[in-house]
Image 1 (cartoon, rainbow, N blue to C red):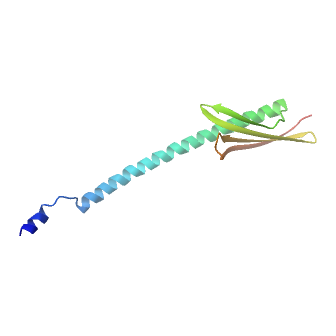
Image 2: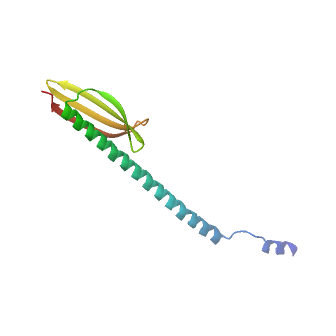
Length: 120
């Protein structure tokens, strides 16, 4: 009889309590994943927008000033470092310019832009 009394007095969680705890944990974890995804997406969009702005300004500068030098430049915009890779080629008076923008120390290309203009 004493064994039977010990079994009734054991403390622990019921299956319902464990399931409720698991559901609460999964809801909280899902919210955390959603917020992290939003933060990463927002940062990526900001980087691509900034890279496009950098490339369009560099292309406009190349066309206005007939700048056909191939250069690799590092720019800092809003505390973030970007690398602008400019390749230019002249063929029969027609200049072809290719611009690529990357985050500094990252291989993923954020923006690529092509342009042609007459150098005469």
